[in-house]
Image (cartoon, rainbow, N blue to C red):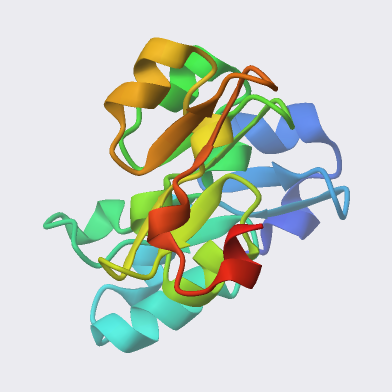
Length: 173
């Protein structure tokens, strides 16, 4: 193996960092860090578990072991990859959060614990799946009514989760 200089040592600002295909700019820490896609080169011979840990060690990256091409398994989280609704909605693993005006992981990709803390997803106790929160997924009455997990509240003009999905009255109200 050969020694490779860290991105933070090679680049000191966002424009020069983004020019390198092996690096990406972390706005939160204002440092240049290794690009998610380049993690594969470091972990190519590793087990899936080791590769996953190496990938998600960077808080800007997400790991998807269901993808066949190992080089694509480590990629930027949706909120870092896309800055507008059209780009975000073009990726089936992401969904646009209209309230926060940012791209987020699609509910279907979340584990139960992450689903329950998400502002745009709701955990369906009947099916054991993470679904779009009705208020985030539907702004119109027709689309809301067409979704079996949602119900339209005429008084508020808003779509909400159907109470049938909850296991107790306290969760519904």
